[in-house]
Image (tube, rainbow, N blue to C red; front, top):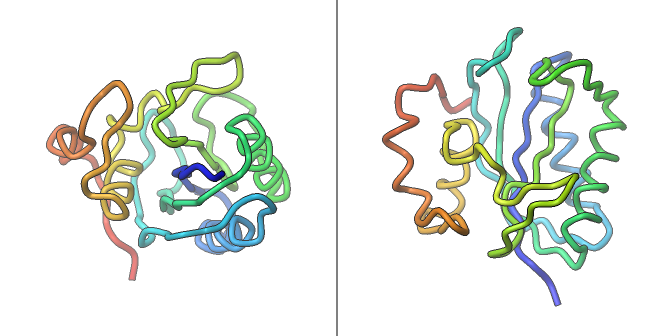
Length: 159
């Protein structure tokens, strides 16, 4: 049995575009997962942070892993890129967030799904809607209803 999960991908340190591309390739090869689709790449300004613009995307996977195991696998990919967490919203070489895990609502010490701010962030919402225009956010309703609220956030498609 597999679950459809959506993963937010972002980076703004080092060669951010290459780091995002490598993360996508690692997701493609991840045991227990099948990469189904990836959004286009987007350039976004940092929110509640500093540093260079981010390169962002969203990936959809079918996974046999439970949510916690998938999160641990994502952390392993981040670590392979030297991810450090010196403070909240620090610039990063790679950030992988488990945005949605099927229609589950999870609130554990290590994981909150749906990701708590995904409907407030254009860098997640825009690529998510690209992949799944009719997707509903568990407990919140249709994702598209939040698009107008993030329309003022700086985001552009990379060529």
